[in-house]
Image (cartoon, rainbow, N blue to C red; front, side, top):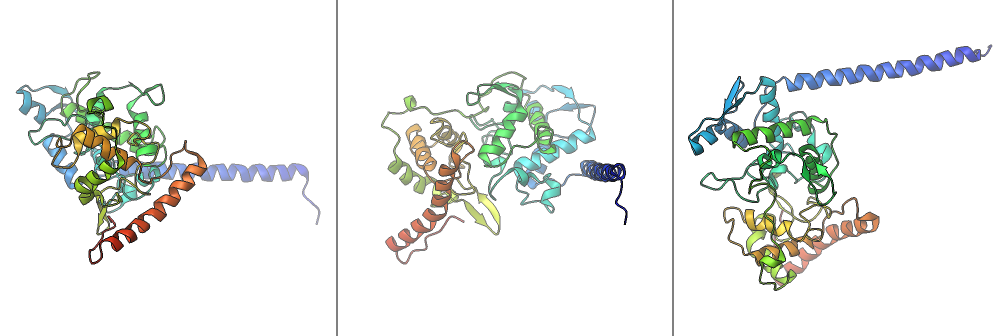
Length: 365
């Protein structure tokens, strides 16, 4: 059989290449159409989001008046309204904050935009840190200081970041949460996950009548410095005792979280499902943030009952529990943390069972 001429071989290779590119283009168009269809469908809200968005009066219309702001100030601040598409984006963003892992969704990948692409472990959810589905309030309806409010974070706009030394917009600050607090991966800036959470944060700011560029007490974490204590020094032993007394009933005796019937009731603060060593919650990096979060937001229902020294001791203890390494720690640190996370919990469980024979020693899950 006579071999093909070089020109024909080149033409066939070119045709194959064009065919592959056209197939990929057709697949991209199909995925884009599927995404568009999903975004046009009604959103099934989590119970928490259904209550919150109804309370804040979210509805499509030419104008928006916040019932929350009206009740607190007696004045109706009229803002530009939301389209049907805006409402769906806000609803999806609320669902992501309340249920990032999709535990309450019939189809997690579809209803949460497959958010677990960007997180490791089975515990992390935005609401664990941004409590109250992004705007934690006291019993009197006043925003909780130092509660990482998404609304207050949105109105801060571009914010100087002391860790990176650059101005970070709201979207890029979200990315850091996925990388460190969720021990995961950075989404694309245009990903629907980022867009919907941003839409929800912006709506919260309007619902709470926050002013753009202002600084609010609920923005970020009200940090606890060493100078705000009696300067006894941060103590691991005191922290461990306080953790067992104040925290273990929710987070488990080893900080591995509490899971019932496959649902995370309280998240892990140690082990493979916890935030990593690079997280801002990690005490060895920033000695003020984690104790500040504990003092202002923990224990649930007893906020503000711990002293500054108690919070620093608990934070020192928690930060020294084994957890995943971040990107900057290197392979040796990552290997050591993996070893500790898988060896220490069963070892401690065994020792505690020997020390307290006849008692049921829970593992926290």
